[in-house]
Structure formats: structure tokens, C-alpha cells
Length: 559
Ligand SMILES: *Cc1c(COP(=O)(O)O)cnc(C)c1O
Image (tube, rainbow, N blue to C red; front, top):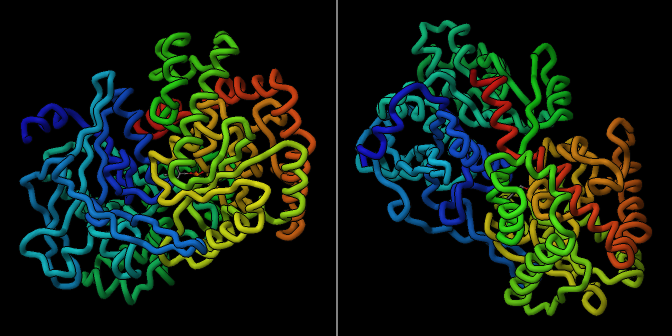
């Protein structure tokens, strides 16, 4: 085990810190897009042999397993898993101070290996060790679980414990990359190690923000901060760089990083307005092409565009693949999904019907129910050309509005039962995501603007020739060419409508485009549909992948 680490200990590394990382289904240490992005980052770094080491929490009880009753009411079951089946326990021990206790932190080691021979070590921090109190042992149990105090303890372990563990393991770190503000306490540790010289720390730190609205940024009352971090000098530093009223983790990271970026061009502009006076660059997100391309398209690309997986730019030449081969891959992927849906739900969906997919975290701003706003119009669309809908997504245990969305979808399913087949698949995870983004015909995305900093599932869909139909927010502003790469829903990026005006415009556009453009094209003009499938691959996937993204991080931030 120690030998396994030898090879990767040489040379300097980028230390990539993330509260959640989605590596594979069996490692349930992710909740949604942020974690899956971290996983894609690591996979691309492995393929490209970028010297990187990742740090996260072990989340011994995972996020949660979703169970839904017949009304769509969600209950959360603990996701029991055993890291020892998949990773190795390391000998090293470090500690972090919480209140007056020295909380011991151990680590697990997992290697993300690439077919290119690259390999990225991931360090999972764990406090469930002998010598810690029962309460402290639980700090690394639940991803995004517990109250503010629990979260701050996790952030102490991740940020401060993470820096110490990397050192204990012998890693030489040249840059610390914070994926969202959760790990920003690492900068506190670095300040203390660098004689409180913030210029030195800034030289070391990179911060990627993912939140486009003020309320989304993690903030802690100083009463709580002082209770957990008793050292007055430390708290002074936090106030100095992280805000005087409350400790704002994003602000802290922002003040202590020389390179800061948002995850799309729009998001970095919005972030600049949120934090005036800071320079915030843009590196648009991407997804790991090989991971999110289904087997049928992998085979096709391997045959016609060899090398595509490590050079996704080659997808620009998708036009060289015979049309019937593209159709065949699409049909096979759709069949796999429909079979899975029927097996899970008994819904009796068929392979021919136009299938719309919507799967993401169930939270208010994503507006999963927008397409169900007007049941009568949906019926009319279904008479123009038959449709079926597939939903999936977990609501955070304390997100009541998100949970209500699931119940509302179930009501929609009931209301349309006799005419339109609609299903909600339980327990959205990476494997189900892969099936969905490759199996449907149209990938729907209806967030409230400007809340979607990026969004990535539409990029996954594009890799499989699945066409995007989305509100102009996040990445879609950069990917969208109307009628060429897919379709927009609602106002143009620069149009400023009020909340209700925008919503009505979006609903109208959504139904009108389905009725007049999308459904007729799918059923009656297959050649035009094929062109959109091709363009999804050749004009979206070739660019919106994490290989391009990581090369940007290397040249703009890491070097
Ligand atoms: C890709 C992915 C997401 C992110 O989807 P968005 O459309 O960006 O919200 C969330 N969860 C899982 C499991 C994913 O694979």
C-alpha cells in the first residue's frame, strides 16, 4: 500500500480539494453536479497525466438512498458502504483542533487510473477512528448532513486536516485548488505556515466558485465559529479575510486566492457583480467524454474517430460517421433506457415514442415541474405526436420545496395517466444518469435564471446525440445555436424580464416549440433531427468536455 503511493509522491502536485467527489456509483461521496464535476476533473487529470492529488471526506454514510411512496413523498435511507472494499487505509494520522479537543483524522487512499497510464490519488479524510469521541467520529459520516456546527466541523477537517494530511503523506504541493468554498479553511492553515503573509498564500491558492447568488454562499455566525475555533488569532484572521458580520467561506477563498474563476462565462460575470472589485475569470465546465458516452457511441467513435476519448476535439468530425450508424447507436441506447424504465416501473413505455428526460437535484430553482404547468397544453402536444416523460432526482433531506416538487410530479403523473406515460425513477445516481442522458431523445432543462451557474447534464446528453432544449442560463448560453445545436426556452440571455413575466414567456416557448417545431421534426423530418444529433456531438461535445476544461486550468491557473 505504501509502495503504491511511492510513485505519486515524487514531484510537486496540484492539491484539488472538494467536499464531494463522484468517482463511481459504489463510492457514494457525492450529491450532485459539484461532485460529479470533481470526478470528471480527476478523470481528465488522470488521462492527461496532470500531476494532481485530490482531497475530500469519506462520508461513511454517504449522501442518502432515496425512497418514494405512491404519493412521491421522499424518505431518506442511510447509504451503508464499506470503504475497505475499494480503498486502502493509510497509516498516517493528523489532528485538528475543534473546541478544546484534538480530533484525530485518518485517511483512505483510492487511485483513479486512466487507460493512458495516468493515475490520480484521492485522499478521503476520516474521523471515525479510535481515540475520538462518539460525536467526533461522526463528523465525516454524512455528506451535507447535520446543522451549521456539523458543517463547520467538516470544513475544519477538510481544509485544515486536508493540508496536514497531504504533508504527513509527503506530498509537495505547488497549488491548492478549492472546488467551491467548503475547503477554504485550508487558506487559514497556509497563512499560519507562511508567517501570515497573505501574498504568499494567494500565490498558492486557486478558487473556483459555483454559486451565482448571494444566498448560496456558505456563511457561519461568529458565535459558532468562536465556539469551534477557540484560538482568537485564528478568528481574527477569519474576520479579516472572510467578512466582519459572518464568516463567508467564498469571500475568504476569494481574498486569499490569486486566481479565481466562475464555471461559465455568464457565471463569472454574475460573480463579478456579486463581489465587486475582484477579478473573476471564466473557465467553462465540461464533462468527461468517455465516462458519459454510452457504449454504442463509444464503439462508433472508436471506429471512426480513433483517439477521441483523449482528444474529444476529434468529435468535430462526427459528420464522417454514416447516418445509419448514428441512428443505430441512438436506438440501442434508447432501448436500454426504456427496458430499464419498464423493468423498474412497469410503465410499458415503448421504443418509438418521443421521450423527454429531466433528471437533476430536486430543488426549487431547477423547476422540474415547469413542463407540467399546463396539463391541457401537454395533452394537445401529445396529440400532435406522442410523448413520454422520464424524471429523476433527489431532494436534499431538509429541502421542503424540493420534496414538494417530487410530489407535484407524482400528481402530474396521476392527472395524465390515461394519456401520457410519465415516470419518476427513484434514487438518481451516476449510473442512472448515464442511462438517462444517453437514452432519451430530448434533454430538458428549465432553471430559473441566473441560478444555474453551469449545469453539466446537458453536456453529457450531447455526447450521446441527445438534443438539448433549455432555458438560456449557465453553459447553454455558450452551447446554444437556435435550431442548430438544440433550442432555447424563453428570453434571450440579455433580455431582462421580471420573475413572473419570464416564467410565462418560458412556459409559452416551451409548449410552442414542442408543438410547432420539435415534435413535428422528430416524427416527420428525421433527416433534420439527425443533423441536430450530429451537431450535439460535433458542435457541443467536442468543446464541453473536461479535457478542454483541464487544459484551461493548467495554462490559466496551475502553471
Ligand atoms: C451530471 C449529474 C448532475 C448534474 O446535473 P445538472 O444538470 O448539472 O444539474 C447531478 N447528479 C448526477 C448524478 C449527475 O450525474
